[in-house]
Image (cartoon, rainbow, N blue to C red; front, side, top):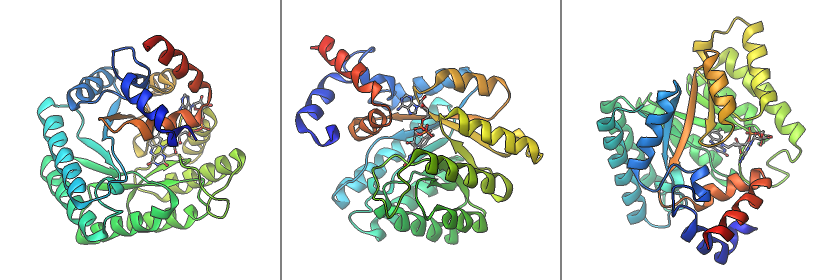
Length: 300
Ligand SMILES: Cc1cc2nc3c(=O)[nH]c(=O)nc-3n(C[C@H](O)[C@H](O)[C@H](O)COP(=O)(O)OP(=O)(O)OC[C@H]3O[C@@H](n4cnc5c(N)ncnc54)[C@H](O)[C@@H]3O)c2cc1C
């Protein structure tokens, strides 16, 4: 509800990133690639890996999608010259999925070609359920052309995900497993946390057993415990998967898992289009809304 409110968006956009202590900086590394690279360096100093996400989604024209593609190519050049981890995450609606699929594939190929020559891995984030089929089909098209430095995301809240995990495992593709961040209709997605969690555990087991270097992306200690227990019981080594968390969330767990020798990657979002991402993070934990309101008062 708040995400659709124009006044909130204007206020948040004006104050959210203004100073080093402004509230949106808790979840977003900054508006520039320079700030993202700095954040990545700091994370890597602690022994963790990164994936950088240039925020943006739902672009409405081929020109905008072209601009986003060029911005990604510039980001990759900046990452390469800074010497931080060569791993990026992107959204297909940022590259033109709402415009047409051919444009999206062209844009994605430009990024994947640069990624191949620069030694990058590209993760295609998963958006809401109207895009699931198109995202997986686009991924598979590129996989069939021969791109291997690319992976997808599967959401445990979707009822269909067991089939999708199987499909990706059959290809040998790398999957990041998440619970899912969008409001979805009952027909498409489980609505109760216990059902989403139970599906997450089922899917992580299939991925650990049959998948290709899966990423288990969650801040939920119960899901992390389920991953560790299953890996231990089945002799799956710590180098066969990685944990992932979002920038600014559960830094305590990030540090302790990495100290235990688990491979760990932090998702570092940055860029001017941070509002929808920021609002999804607030929606996941309404307690954060109080923190933002208090910060807004003090900023004004
Ligand atoms: C690396 C990464 C990539 C992702 N990519 C995608 C994607 O492509 N598509 C997609 O739909 N979703 C994506 N997500 C988001 C995901 O779907 C969930 O919405 C999000 O991770 C919250 O679920 P959870 O597994 O942490 O469990 P939850 O049950 O939501 O939370 C468990 C615990 O984590 C902590 N926590 C969770 N969220 C917050 C928060 N915002 N602020 C403070 N504490 C919090 C709390 O302690 C909470 O009790 C991604 C998540 C990660 C970590």
